[in-house]
Length: 450
Image 1 (cartoon, one colour):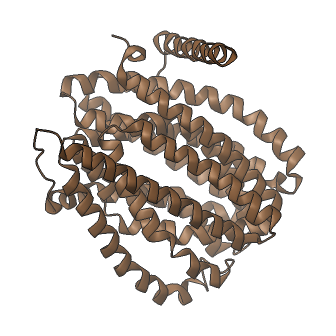
Image 2 (cartoon, rainbow, N blue to C red):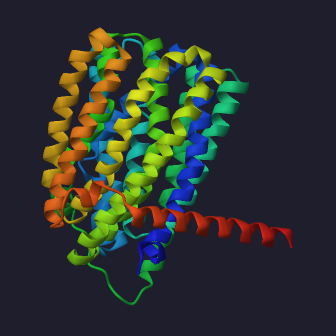
């Protein structure tokens, strides 16, 4: 059976369709915010959101991945819900006071270009992000993909609406952008929690009793994966920290964040695959996991390359025509795109290795890549500015992808090329998927016309 014919492939396709909707909303939000806020406002908004995102990365302790793993392994939903609620409350109560205590010092360094009052308001996002992530991980682990992707699609549309209303129509600037973010993510988190609750009630009615998840085993698994998740986040965002510290220029940061937003558009392909691959591997026999991972990696890389090839001219024209004030984003964007292609491999391969219950090599490689990223940023930002930050990301992301592929090839008892070199099989699979999509669109149009 080919990957195109499996339920796994259909779930990936479902997630990918939602990612396409998210892509459209994300790019619209990025361009609207850039147009409405300008480089300085866009940079200030990015720094404001960097605070709760960093706190979330510090607080999550690898628990989202652990919840996904144990939910995919068949542990009871009730026990997972209890752990998710307790973790959200405890971690929020611990970190918010600490953040308030250290903010005055951070405002003189990394966050010197961010509005002080909005930094404190942004702390409300921490419990929202924790709850949404932990409860969403339950849905991913249970393979309740359709329900979760519908929520994510609604969140994307809601974000666009909030930008139009609060920033565009009400003219609330950076405050309006932050307020819209809090409202939409809060509503999305509530929807995820309600979905988990309904699924949990249905599961309790089943005749088969599932074994409970124990907090100690989740924490033990999560802590093994925590270095990887934390260092991966820091690798993605260390450039913003260092740009804020070394340059302190909201305008330059605004240009850079637009370049990052554009380059990260290609992440929608590997994200859709890695999100489903991880719990699939966790619940699969080892032979099946070793078989599907290389082919999925090659297919993901092929689609990502094609998406990037289409993105580059489109993004350049769009920036020059719609956002001429952001023309300085083009050079770092062009440098970042190959790095995001490399990360597409890392995302899928890391999902395979982690799904096998091997978080340690994922963590070690992430730490090595982070150290390289920080050193390169310190060396390249002073002479090259935001282009230097992009170059540091390109080099460290490429190194991360090569190291992860080496580990995965050893675990799968195959060559690195099996993960990195798309061929005719992947091209044929892509053509088949596109044909299936076209048939589905035609069938839907025919039904609508009746």
